[in-house]
Amino acid sequence: IKETSSRVAMVVPVRLRLQRFGRTHRPVYRIVAAYSKSRRDGRHLEVLGMYRPIPEGREDIQNKMKRVELNMKRIRYWMAVGAQPSGIVAKLLG
Image (cartoon, rainbow, N blue to C red; front, side, top):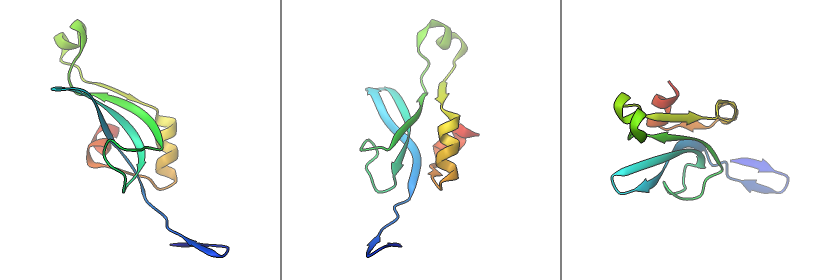
């Protein structure tokens, strides 16, 4: 809890986590910065990247490649201001 002038404001922790998109059996995840109390697919503060766990396209299927796209500059910013990555996001970040 922080006190600001005459009122008290709650500090809600920010998490870096996955938001699920895509269709049935073909998930695509956005890596987002969101308040820890918001729903998994609910409101977010910023989109930081994408994670595609299932290969798409002929070349990806042959190589069995999963795709991860990250905006490292913004991820570093959110980590610097105190955002905590979820378990899976921490694994994706290395």
